[in-house]
Length: 539
Ligand code: GLN
Image 1: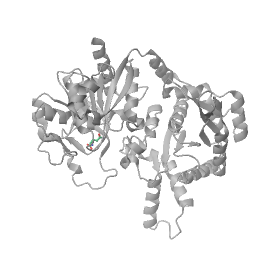
Image 2: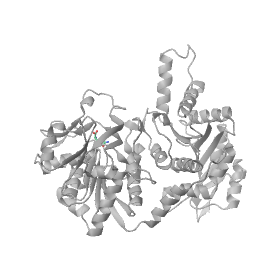
Image 3: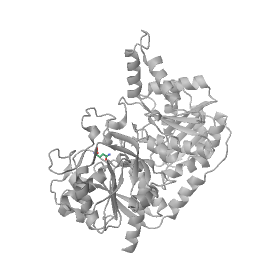
Image 4: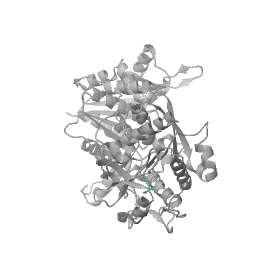
């Protein structure tokens, strides 16, 4: 029988529910269980694809081309759960399908209501995400208990707990223990948060308290007493100054996996924490530091390029070097005279440049200037999606001498459209879910940097774009020395460009950051960071 764990949050948002749910998933996998992760997002958007990164952070893309919440990225980094469209449920999707069924007359004239029709649809979606190998499904419910939008999801969880029984379905609730005055820790918000859960008809079985420090036994017992949670089932996610990848070990030390398995009546198949111990060993063993300039336009918000930053960290683990992020707002680089002062400065300068994915015209010229600076100064460069297109525009402008070389995304009337709309996109009008999305194959040219990274000709990575390298410039670009080193299997689209006479400069049309893990870094990020490290060592 499938087992369910519902992870909810209280007191306030941004407590790290995604990391807590993922870390619990990681621990259960260490015990030999097949874990599936599902995210419920209470917003009414059908998916995250049309949301502004400033509001919602990065859009995470699955193999089957779903544009999802960034928490799926956490699941991918911590667990081996397959992640598809079905693993991301939004209120928008639920209403969309209920309304469709209503129009098709499938409710047989009944009045369609939040309960039972919306809640039944949520329950159905959760069950559909399971497969026959699933031992435990961890369902993270977005938002905070008390939010109006979360109510149908919590009600669906309550019903599933009731139907499957406490021995098969657990509620894990994450709260905050704030510090007030001089280091005084307060449990009251946690008590209120659990009360709010109880009002929804759910008694949490396990509490995870976010706190600045580990809480002593007495305080944990007090929390257990006032929240009706068993002694020994109150855990602490205390602040750590190493890395979020230490969280599975923090939970393990407190025996969270044992308590959860006991409550679910599941026997541990084995216990193998080695992968997480190795991550921490690699973390401690890093020597020296490299500074990577990430040149983009959402620099104030760490979540906007979440998977890219995590992938750089993973690459640092594998290349045994600390990666310091230097977030550069590309609009600061629009004036070519300012570029060297910023990127090449002795104090704030960078050892490598990464231009991540992005949309829209703002800041593009600053990115082109950063690419030129990296090319001319022989500084390693990794361009992802838009970052590859920037590499092509830069080559068009500065090497081929086409001053107005551009993508038609930014200048529709340019005489030199070196990046242009994908043919299949020409007649597309809807914004949601209509790009080239999801996993597809690229074939690498032997002897190239990309081939050296993957050690493989056939590369499967995920895409999310409307524009591409314009084929009519293939000959001119490569005659001038820009190497085209990966293509779609039919040869129709360019997937990778590389610089010659340069230590390491490469752009890919796909997004390698979505598949990078702390336990196995993306090959491209790893080789990029290794090149940066080696160039710095030889300086
Ligand atoms: N805006 C570009 C395109 O649509 C790049 C997209 C991206 O970087 N994900 O092709």
